[in-house]
Length: 253
Length: 238
Image 1 (tube, rainbow over the protein chains, first blue to last red):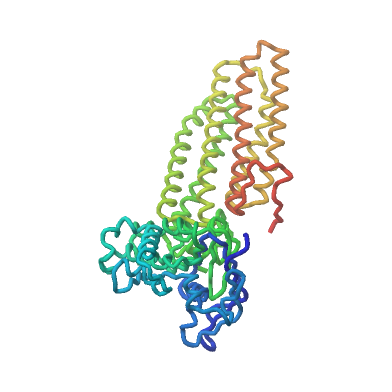
Image 2: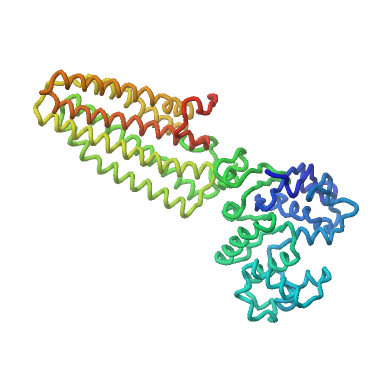
């Protein structure tokens, strides 16, 4: 692995006493690759994802120890503004959450927030983001329509367009396709595959076949720890740990 | 037991039973071609055309079982998307199935040669070379099926390593028969039939070795094909 873009060191997270969620997490994320985090519900996947852009701090009583290095610098450093961090490390959630405004304004939202005022630049960047999110052809004639009229799969791609419009370096996807039909799911997966040229992607998924299809690296989590982390082909053909094997083959003890 | 070292059940009982059926069928395939080979060799050495005919007839069952096992594999791949040990099991079974079917074909070839030899009424040959090669080849095939049935990597590795010695035996037998033909040109017709049978035995040794390689892949996830003796991984018996 070349110089990792993100390096997680001895990370632990709890939501108050007796409520440890993550333990002793060590993980290096490779630039321009897709890393999948798999594991059962409650294993800590989403919490780990939310640590990466400090979203977890919005949860009451969240306590983090250890460190996360992003491009060689701690994301918990005194000079780091969480809002800026979240622009550089964007996030897309399970349920598509377009804002109650037009398709255009949804994508332009983050750009405006960042102070972009030029209509020409906005127009250009919105189009680029929609193109990159593979949605442009479907919405180019109705950019002023409400985002709510789009289908679930389109809404999810719109949200991805909104996230990439501000040109983040890392994209965190939390179950991005779990509420979508199989065809929309394949579109999102194809999109993930193409987006890794420009971004580093971390995807949390319940769907193991999806993890196997889209990711370059895969981490299996259990009880707040990373049991195994390896390149995806190895993890899915010849895992080292019995617990990983049991989980991905659907066995119980 | 064939497959995973640790005997855990799938959450899906249906998937469990599909994998069990597949394991049973590939072992049945092994048993079938092994008895085909034993019968074919007996037909030849005893010059018994009834046994030869039986082998030729039974080849149909080998082919039918080959098709069924392939279908089971395709169905599991399509419907279950197996991973890890399950995936390696299905991939290994596909290749083992192919190799065992070829063993069946070679056994049928030996039976056909036996029939030709019996019908030619030439009772001269004592099949010295055939006897010499038949025993170790049959033993190797047996061992490869044992390795499969018990997921025995050490035994599988031994088979793969020892394939060279079968090749050496085959080379020696060939040279002896050629010498024999040079000395007795009248015997060329019979000896040629022996040569065909000898070649079939040598191929069966290769197929048994391939089965051993697939057992190693199935259990360890390591591809040992086309490795030299020095490149072979070392495992310690558990």
